[in-house]
Length: 115
Length: 111
Image (cartoon, rainbow over all chains, first blue to last red; front, side, top):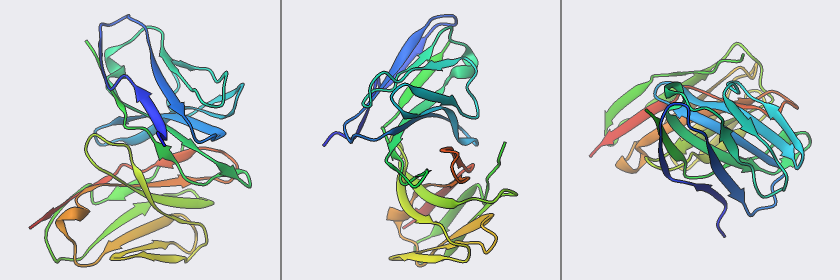
């Protein structure tokens, strides 16, 4: 059982380049989300989705786009990378019950450097 | 924006010592979770607390949710090197589908 799979594991970009971070889960979870982790900042929510076709902004959405065409996939797009987006990115999924999130299952992360 | 503050930020202790990590906020949460993260991996859930005053135990780890559901603590008894890691608290406001994470406590237990 793969759980939450993120690709790539590492990525180096130049300022202004675009790229997509991939996230796939095989647990049939309705809820998926993207976080970034910076030293001393914990994890900050970028975007989240409660089901296919539904997305919403988190704490730090600027500079990132998402879409949710299937239950399994939730890609994160950087349209024009900036050095401030250097970070470790985590995708997480969860089943929801009674209007809340029960348990977040995390991928192993993508380490992104923007030069 | 909700803010979850954890203290201490760093903790280095000897094997066998006890420790407590705190997670505080001015916001009320419908549930609060504690995660542990190893280097190069994503966080892994340790426990969820949902009721004010609730206490949960997981072997040598004791978790408490404040009566007002604004704060929580994690107590480790007789710490072991295997407890080394980054501990994160995360809170959700009812119906928002947003889990806000604390700033983290990096624990190192020396043998």
